[in-house]
Length: 315
Image 1 (cartoon, rainbow, N blue to C red):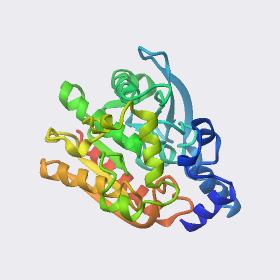
Image 2: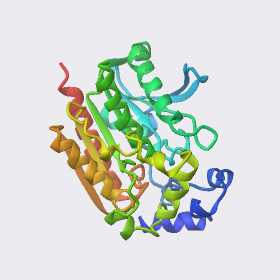
Image 3: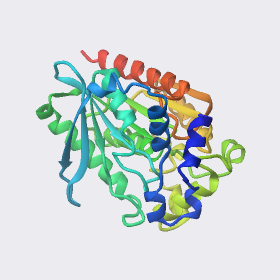
Image 4: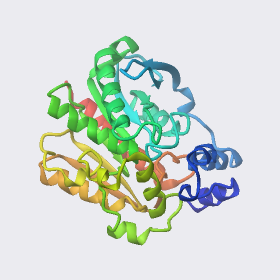
């Protein structure tokens, strides 16, 4: 993990809190640092390299949403994971977050649809949430045309994308439509309190600190009060019963750790089956770094095991 952070510094990445939105979008990402390290160490890109991809556009009321479909080796119809990338709803895209959906497709033998959504500040909250739900509905109705099995559909996401995945699972329950069989939530944004134990411990952590989170919230919402909306402040909700079983993966050196722990506890108290683990010695963004960070490999294995079991439980 330290090697990745050192490489990120060598690539001259700066905390987003001190940057303009265009600067933050243009600079090197933690994923770039991990890829550079993998290349330097001559680590093979197999078996994930055998996953094929196809770019599509998902129709929405606001124009087409870009999406990348990851298809594993073998014969379908395959189970399906709808995946939402991180970046605080402001930066990053499906190109930056390539490693996670690729590894999930290879490991879970599932089609992964990595979905783009409108970003703030050009499109404020709840634009990304609306797009996430639109994309999920489209996948449920159309994935059979891409050799996917909509009876076996899960949602997954990292950071801001973890929040979107959790919201889609909740929305599916509320709307009484096809519910995902599982939700994989990787260090999700789940609260609006920036004075939790992990915020205090990791106020100056890299690549994500407290000032960076404040920067994201400022760009995403029209006022800080909007962060208390139940779609952002998942920990404040009381309607979690009956939502899909969850895998919650957290990082020790991450301001978002405490709110993720709280959300996992609230799900469990609501009777939802939860498998939660905080990985020590790693930071926010570690999940897609399985090639170079051992804990990321362990986290990915945990995610794949849980997703596979969820798919297998559907007869």
